[in-house]
Length: 146
Image 1 (cartoon, rainbow, N blue to C red):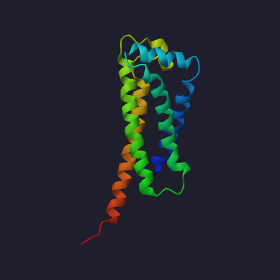
Image 2: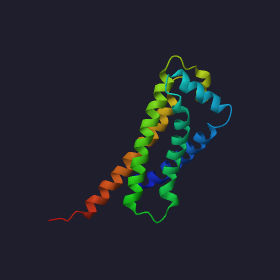
Image 3: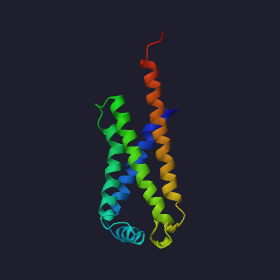
Image 4: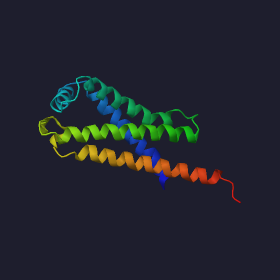
């Protein structure tokens, strides 16, 4: 079952992150994102870094499926690395949602509780677990039996 989950989850996360990272360069989303970062007392550099790393993470989720010559091991390494980046990004997103100075009006769908970042984090952890489980299964096939 885990093998069937990996590709659709990583493709979904890749498209989602790339698109929303890209949209953060345009109004009104750009203005909302700027306010989120400023009101969270994060460094000003976090604005550009957040936009670019979100798009980069999206590309990294898509890379293993676009680059067909990758070995299964390399694909799994890229996906696990990407999942770890997304954990950090969603931790920051949850932090931003929980800041009392950040108004709900500048958050996705106007929802103050960190429902969306928590859902993306859940999908990310499901992807990471499925990849990790797949790696363990492959390693058990490689180990010689005595």
